[in-house]
Image 1 (cartoon, rainbow, N blue to C red):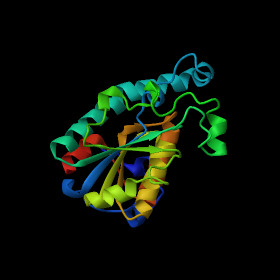
Image 2 (spheres, rainbow, N blue to C red):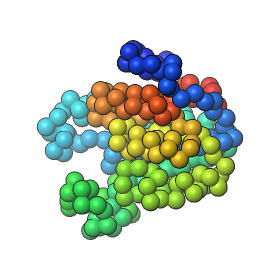
Image 3 (tube, rainbow, N blue to C red):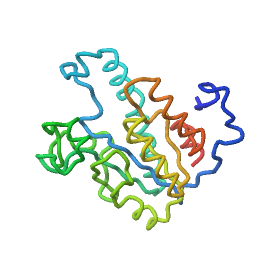
Length: 224
């Protein structure tokens, strides 16, 4: 089923302001945002899981039953078409974590994962191939102080499809900057997740109103 922003916000003039463009596989890259072991499951004994069991149930179910299966399909489609795939990983790069901003250090003190630890790695089901680009970042956005923009332009990429977690944080932040940098930008609805359906929908609407398109994995594969 296609994603329709007007079902969520019927009053907004999408017909006048929504961005319109077509995708072609030769100039389109897939960017997989922060789909690391630690971020794809909320443990029942974690502070979040204990205090908000409904969030834990919703998020874990969406990841396991919707996001991972559809992301696997999308990665396969890009791989079979020889299209470029990039991954980002988010978190500390050292065991101390003092290279991160004060705001992020406060949320991750002491650090629970850093580069080289098992939970920092991309999930096994979607693990990068040797030819895929992997970008480590200290902030939410995939373009901020990283090599991503440079690499995509060297690839000849004009369009980016963005998937991953969390929809309203790193996914939306990366999509917004991609659009500002001149890339035609798509967020894949059923390859992304955050803690609540409302937060997910609001992030997608923010993107769809002015900055790019929102598609399902099925519609993306068909268009490419």
